[in-house]
Length: 134
Image 1 (tube, rainbow, N blue to C red):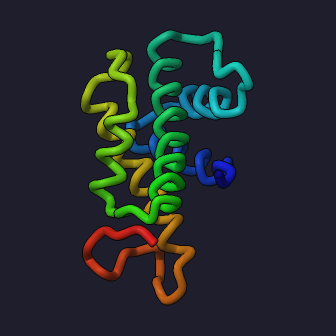
Image 2: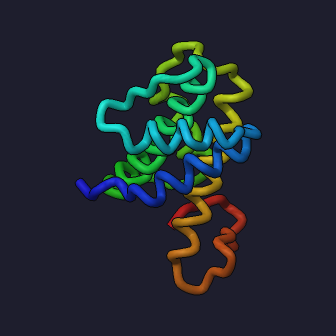
């Protein structure tokens, strides 16, 4: 299995922090969560819960992309979004709106990064109109 792209996961997580209007504190907590071997942080519970969700979604998103690529499966945005939702544990630490905003931001960042790697496409935009990832 290919290694999870740590820098790409971090960019996806930070894009999600921006999407949910996160503070500098949340940005710091997300980065701490991503780089902590135990995955634990000592901070304010609500901020840490959302930071944890963001880190989890960013990591899961790239794991899903790698899995779908390995199986040569469909990599459309809606497929990626649905797979991430299925893989999330519904522990109720974040509202559905927060969860959906985080997932959407992470999927957008993944699409931006994967399409910018493909030759012939500019600005990371999918030019097919189908939402197909490379």
